[in-house]
Image (cartoon, rainbow, N blue to C red):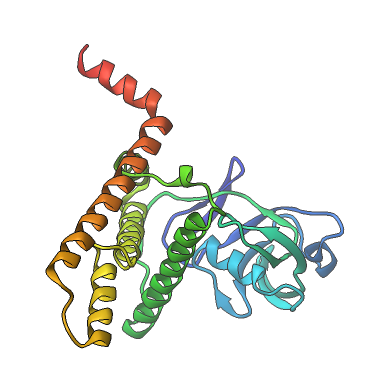
Length: 262
């Protein structure tokens, strides 16, 4: 059940999302196609939309290509063909790419309870989970590469303090956002662990590769130096991350310390 209250689309159960159109931009692809304020969009190309991210991704990836929107208007089900307008943009990773836009704004939506669970068959749930893991692993790896290449500031990197703050915010939103954040953190650690740095698994894999090419083990002195360099690099990374955390949340940390001694 969905209804509108004070400009917010409210869901009484967890089901495929329905997006209330708040505004259609003038002379936009959506306006030319016949989308109206108050329409409720529930599918793209016949596929039901479960998350706003799915809708955005489908529109962004269809620049210049017609898509079919499933629309509910005054109790009537409609199908509207819209061709997203190609636009050049720079994403949060600093990448410039062409995306599609249709020119609509939605009311924010919230879930106020669960009356029925989201049910996926086993095969679909496995495919969905694998695709999500591949996507976020790729995004994480690319983000780290751009940090190393200097395209993203190292100041954006956070450590334990930032994780604790984000975890608290996610937990306040419910257990699903919290579990999602934990999954993203696990994927981050997975990617970091594969870096070709001594003392990490990636560094050990590089060492094993070199030994297999040489067909003999490395000398003990080299291994000791190799591990020491790796440990020093890790400690440097930890120090930089803590510096970022402390400088970012200095005010919050100070208030917390004051609270302890009151």
